[in-house]
Length: 384
Image (tube, rainbow, N blue to C red):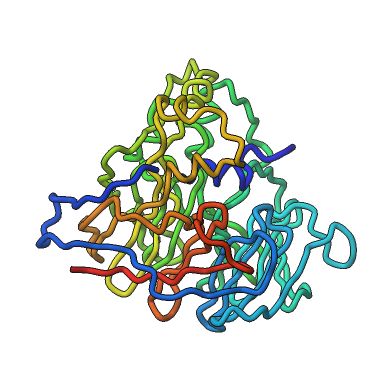
C-alpha cells in the first residue's frame, strides 16, 4: 500500500504568512527576537537536497533528496564526506525509505518491513528489527530513533491488526490512542509502548482530526512532542523506561489556520472539508542553550488558496506565501514571542549544531540569487 503522507505531501503541509509579534501573556519583560543569517555553508553538489539531520559528535550534516533514497554527509565546511544511493538489490536492499536520520552517528533509514538499517560510509553496519507485523502510511519527517540504557526508542508503526477504515470514526479513535513511541530491549527484543497522548488531548475527543504526524525532540530526560496539525506541545518526563506527561503547552500563533474537525459519524467529510485550505502545522521543536523554538507554518485560508489558483511552479508560490516562523519559549515554557520569520528561502528541516547555531537548507527556487551547489544557512537567534 502506498503511504498516505509522502515527503512531498508533508512539505506541502509544512508551509504560513508573514508578520512578527510578541506574546504579551509571558511573565517575562518583553523582548524583541529575530533570526539572522550569520554565515553559510556551500556544498559542491549539483542537485536538489535538503538538510535532514546533524551529528554533534562528528560535527557533520546529513542531506537527502525528498524521497530519502540518495543522501550526502558533509562536514562543517561543506566538504562531502559520503555520497550514497540506496538500492533495492544487493546485500542491504532498501525497498522503502520511510525515514532518514542519524542514530549514534550512523545514517539510519526506516526500511519497512525490515525495520531500521544503519550505515557507515555507505556500508550496512547494523539493523533494528521490529518483531511484529506492521503497516506504514507516511514518511517520518524526523527519524526519532534514540537509546537510553538497554532500550532503543523509535516511533511505533501501526500494527497490522489495525483495520484501516478511513470512512469510519472508530478507526481514527483507535489510531489516536495508539502508543506514539515504542521501546525495544536490546538483549531480548521485547517491545513496549512507552508514550501516548494524555487523556486531556483534544485529539482523544469524539471527533475526527485527520492524520497527525508525530514529531518529537529530546532535551535530556524531557521529551517535547508535536502532533503537526495543532498549535500545541506535549511535554513528557522520562521516568524509568517510560515517558510521563507533565504538561501541555498551548502555542499562541496569530492568524493560525486550523483544521476543521468533523463528527465521528461523518468521518468521510474530513478531507473534503479541509482540502479547501492549507492548514497550519507545527513541524519541529529546536533546543538551544537558552530557549525552545517551535517551528511552524500558519497555513493558507480557502480565500488565499483560491487567489493563488493552480500554480505551475512546483508549489513554490504556495511555499512563498506560507513560510516558516518561530515561536520562542524560555526553558520554563513561558512563550516570549511568535511569528519570528525564518529567511524566506528556508526549507523545513532545521537543526541546531553544537555551536548553538540554527542551520537550515536553502530552497533554490525561493531565492533571488543563484548558487553553484547546495547552500546551508547558519542562523543566530538575536535578542534585543
